[in-house]
Length: 289
Image (cartoon, rainbow, N blue to C red; front, side):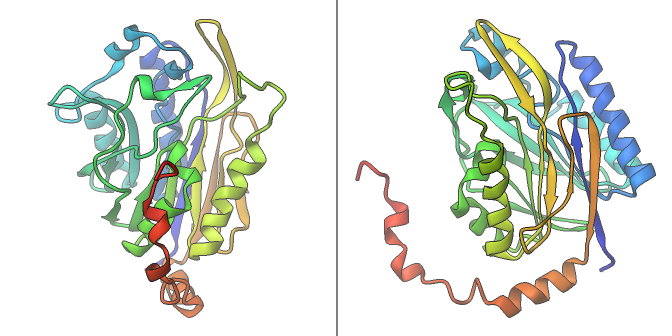
């Protein structure tokens, strides 16, 4: 396989959903045409402001089914046109009436390979996601695409090394994390950015795999809460070193990897062979057990 080129897209989201979708489409075209991107990662729930800042039943109107979703169909056509692989983040209302924070996985021919539903759901000031989302019904999954096998986690998933390791064990070549993270309303002086990035760099190094995270930017207010999303989207190589990154402005960051060579390197490190799952029983227990 030739080198695979990954792009992370960083953008702000305003109240006009149509404008957000148009802006995302423009940035995807730029990444594909001008940067040669083959895998493109957008921020979490980019089509609207981050409504989880407040708890309001009004926001459930933003949810849409995965099947027959015109937005997914639009971006699937775009992916096929530019031959890019794309995880498309959206607020899903299932056929059974449950609500999920989901990603539709789109291959480079425009085929929707399936849907991943966020596994880990936070519920903290400014991030009231348990009000809106049911935890995903399957573990983090891996998808075979034209440009390699991709594992996808969604924002809060990125803090859990267990999820990253599961995806690598399932054969992932890349770990992709659509994200929405910024200031902490309960502690305005706390800066989560270093821990956020270092955690994912750790996933990369511990599993010998590239990691890409796309975050939103901008200041958004909902109810009495006001948050600044710090961006800082980045791509890490398989050793945990950041090889492409952005600051707090709109933009595209790109990096290329020889996935065949990285598979060989991962085999040589034996991080999967030398695991001791016979000792890991406590990992399956909750802290209340």
